[in-house]
Amino acid sequence: MNFMDIIYPVRRCPLCGNKVFKYGLCKSCLEEMEFIKDRICMVCGKPLGDNYEGDVCPDCIGGRSFDKARSALVYNERLHDMVYLFKYKGKLDMAEPFGKMMVDVLKSWNPDVDVIIPVPMHPERLAQRGYNQAYLLARVVSRISRLPLREDLVRIKHTSVQAKLDKLERFDNMKGAFCIKGGEKICCDNVLLIDDILTTGATADAASSILKAGGAHKVYVLTLATGRNT
Image (cartoon, rainbow, N blue to C red; front, side, top):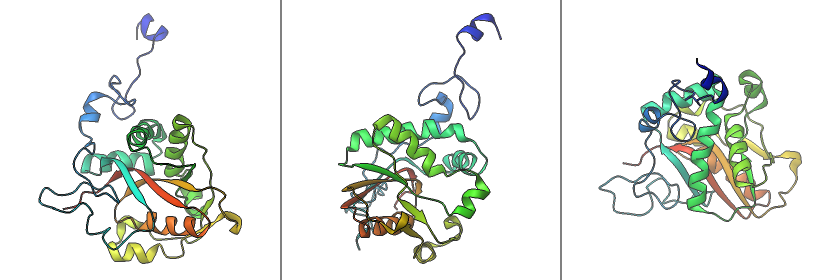
């Protein structure tokens, strides 16, 4: 390291250590991410397959508890590895670049929201991991967007890990998982619910249902990534 590196330190990618290009990540790591640019489901925001003719994906045709959802990235294999480091290996500095990507989606989407609420973890799992990745993402989004961050939602059921379950099991797993803190009503109209990944939407549906029962008028969901509809 030379003298100029000490005076003007070069920002380094938290994933590989290369020079930062955008979002606090290097160009190489960014190129491995698949930003959502294709035609998407008008409800859940998943990219639609080239041969799919409708505007709403099969998962959303029957209706959702949330009003709309949007994501920044497609949950591909490389992103899975990155999220794993963030979610399970204490790579907390990934919250900043991931959160900034979500803010860019929020700016272009521009839903009418009053407050940000992260999807909570069960206290036992939070104690084991030491942090809630959804809260860390929500904190970045709140800071940049200047929307207030509240933790009105509480997880009261120690659910199984969703990634290990099939679609029907995921929805069953989330039944009775959440409640409003203190059993009180939410004194706001529109909520932006923050989570890391949207797959089946079971978590978002369960949380949104409770938020609306607690007084929220509309619930919009913003996640870092989502799967692709075929």
